[in-house]
Length: 138
Image 1 (cartoon, rainbow, N blue to C red):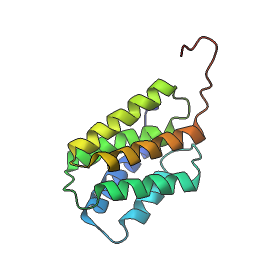
Image 2 (image 1 turned 180 degrees about the vertical axis):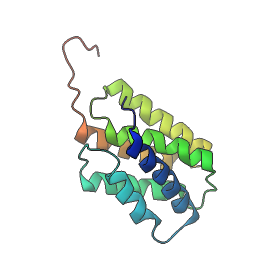
Image 3 (image 1 turned 135 degrees about the vertical axis):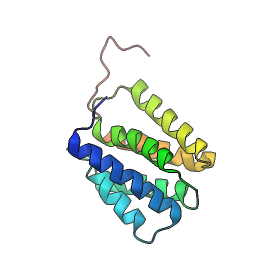
C-alpha cells in the first residue's frame, strides 16, 4: 500500500474537507472534490473515472452529517484507490469493502455506497498494473 508523502498528506486533509463540503451541499464542492481527487498522486487516472468517482461520492454524501474524523477516515482509502497502481484483486476488493463499511457507518444507503465502491473498482481497472501470474490462485 502506498504511504503518502508530506505534500500528499496535505492533499488528503484537503480531500477530507472536500468530502465535508460535499455533504453540506456547497455549490463548488463537487468540482473541488474532482480536482483534488485527480491531483492526489503521480499516478495518471483517466478524467472520466475521476469524474465518476466524484459524482458517486457526491450522490452518497450529499445531505449527510459528516464528522471531521469520518471525513479524514474516508479520505485515506480514496488516496489508496487513486495512488496505488499495483494492488492485487484481493487488495482492491478489501479496499472497496472497507470504503463501503465506512460509508455505511456515515449513514449512506447501500446502493450509494456500492456505487462508490464500483467507481473505485473502475479506477483500479484502469490504473492497475498488477497482472495475475501463474502462482496466483483462483
